[in-house]
Length: 251
Ligand code: PEP
Image (cartoon, rainbow, N blue to C red; front, side):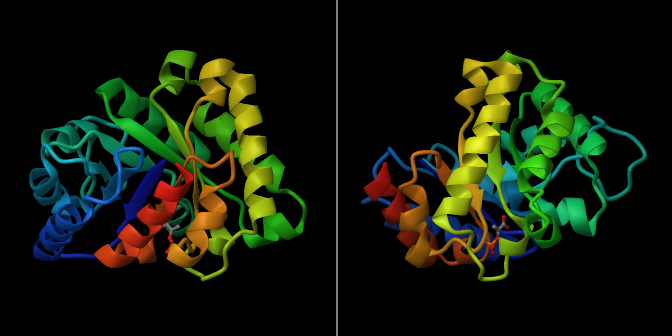
């Protein structure tokens, strides 16, 4: 059971360090069945990795550029992330897709670059409101998987995680119903299984979209859900740990 926080463009290095210290001091009652993880901004990445070093807290970057180095002002590469002591990366978050225009082909390059460098990607997919209302959810999810991940092998799949994050549920307070989550996760698992067989069906599937302590339990208890990706409610330690407590009950 994975409980992962995505801090987006929030927290200075000092705030990030305090969060890690407070979390590690208070996470004792959460058993090792629940994996705790955070994706800080690039600036706070090394600080968080150092503070979490040797602890239970897993750390990931929120993005990467597919090239290893070069004239890409403002970008960060896989070797830089690894050098900061971090072994995970988010790829394809809806804010990257929609606010920064990252398309399926570019995201596929990022996934390949991450895996080739030894980073473990959490690949995010999800439909927007118009697509859901038009009954196109399954088609969109399948397209995002096939175009973003279609070039991978079963060996790659063993190092992959996928997050289902309906765009209309991210940061809006609207949570997908348990039926919607179950249906989408079943569709995703079937598509991953079609691509890679057993390793595809074993890819951990996280749900994300306005998860908080009050709704985490009903989502995490679904058999098709292996964890949650949490934005706003991950920013304060008590809120994050309250979600981890729900995960503990479902683990
Ligand atoms: C996210 O950032 O991936 C997310 C799901 O945000 P929120 O929990 O705030 O909706």
